[in-house]
Image 1 (cartoon, rainbow, N blue to C red):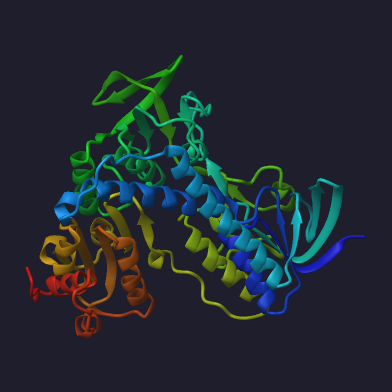
Image 2: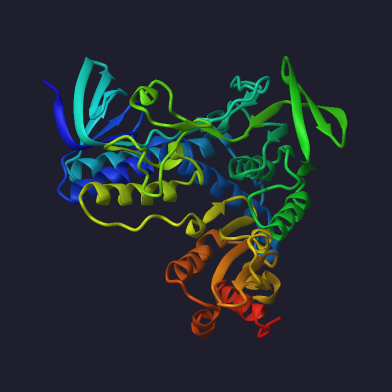
Length: 463
């Protein structure tokens, strides 16, 4: 006999498990179906383990700077397997925590592969056979996987995807990273810091192409200073693989160059996990591997929702989590507000860190806004200097007519923590007046956020 639920969530990444827990809190009978591992890609192979790796690289970098701080450190080195082991341990700890949270909230977990057999009906292939599950509402949270381009397919030996890079079989000597989005730049930063001779190829005209152009330029300057080679407006046409060597054919400036590497990381985007779910049969629309939804994550098929990466950009865990809460509340009969895409922050944990929310300067102008732009450099901040981190910038963009904070963009130490102040400001629909009147603690990096606002209106104090 089929198990029956009020809500069935397919996938247990951040969007999926948060959706399930919120639904259970609201009194729904909830099940989660997971085909691989609780926590999904983010906890097991994405957000969390990469941050653990990058933390090791950050400490290694600081150890080499010991003399700047009046300290001494000799025989500085690293044990790559131990670095990876720590990262995997962090991921395992958090993934097991998801299982605990689901159990605590009385969410039924079914391990297996789900197929939508009919509206409200799911067939699940498990180790013990096939189960039938019914749900009044079904939430797709199946996530995404690395995009593979013809000729650039990963093999786990010479050419890696993000999973191979998280559990590397060796330390690269000469590394090529294809793609300079968040995933590519974070891996480039990690391996470059540990000593790999790193080249980044980006098809767009600048690295971190979704970021504000000024912030991208400052980040690139620091990457190059650290020894990275950056090739922009360039395309890897093909890879010739030989024993222990890859020859990359790179087209740049109308000419094709060849460069040899021992390792290649392909980070050219992601594709949604929409296959073998039975979506087409139910009438759900799919556009470029992502399920088409409205602002409430409804697919147009009665009782079927899609959240997170499978529902399209921005491909961020925190976006998925908030969509999960919204959908659970909607299913439970509440009236949640839809998520505003322009108020979702983006963070990249390379060195230096990059963070942003809202419109870039270029986009604000393109949308017809009359803008005021404020800037404040890290070198003007006492805490940044004390930390030995004087390189960076906080940039704010305001509507000159209304004072609305249109966007905020940062590059430098700990900006992934600072950005939330501006995110809250946008959620509260604050203007420059409230931000100017807010008292920021001293000495902190957050003072630069205040000064950047003041700068937009010609009132900077410390620079």
